[in-house]
Image (cartoon, rainbow, N blue to C red; front, side):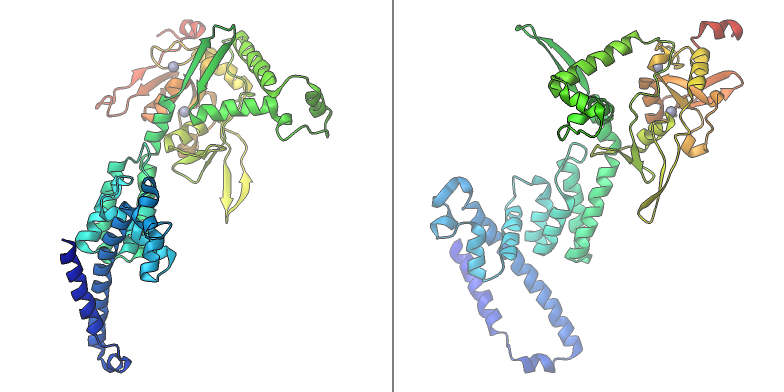
Length: 440
Ligand SMILES: [Zn+2]
Ligand SMILES: [Zn+2]
């Protein structure tokens, strides 16, 4: 078998070496002929690329780290397969690395199964090695929302497009495609993270107890802000420029003990709070950065969906910042926030979450603007506001329910996938006073 391969290469090398290399002959060629020669050149290079990949990939397969110095490269006096290939070709480390990486794909790389279409395109269609690299690099690694099979389909699509694209354009195209896949996965990934939130309390046999809290990014942004507030002067060491900071620095408690005490106080204050009062404006707000469409919660790495951006803007926990020429030029006031007096009025009118069947008191609710602030430039008037618990506020925005007002009555309109006829549902107030004042 190997002798057959060798004789193929022997014939090819002899044929290539027989091609004249007298510059005068090339100078004498017609334009049409020279263009046909560039075509031949491309075919030769692509065919040679496929062969180099198969050879380099096999050398790498026989030189894996677990084989140690019994591997092919080391037993031949080279540290790595790349060095063996570089020595054989007299090329750069970069070229040798490329030949080995693409060669692994040509042999069916188990580490990167989503690039199997690329390996096949190299061997079957002589996809250039640089194009194969562009696809792998641009597509990146699979994640929970862009799993390996989705990446494999994208890799196949890029191999098809590679027939008319060079490696540079292919890299850009692959990056764009990856970004599109990621954006399509934003709401899904957000939902997955939210679904994983959990808080567990363990009582240990040694008399201590342990709390484990897995937080989705939005929860983490709010809890993180409280944590930072409780412990901040200690971060980066004590500062002596304010009496308050030195007082905290004099505190004999460790940062962990201090955080424990502060969180207990917060919980006690929360449980003592009057449930007819809305959450105070001292509650930590999350800041969302967006240029339209999806956005980012400040301090959190992953994007959030357009629905989440809408909901956070709706509850007045965002601040609009206009950016022009890369500079923030105008920081809007948080006008969407209902004032303390307006919240008292909303609490008196709604008595808690107005979602049909929900019994959450006002202290558990957020004020939803029935006219979307962003979309309709809604006013922060009491009649435009309605109280929803966090769960129902989330549901409303994410599943695209709508609320309309008909005089004093509010109606909940389901999205078409819940009710194709979109029949409005009444949203009775749970405030006893309002029921007596406005009989149904
Ligand atoms: Zn809302
Ligand atoms: Zn509710």
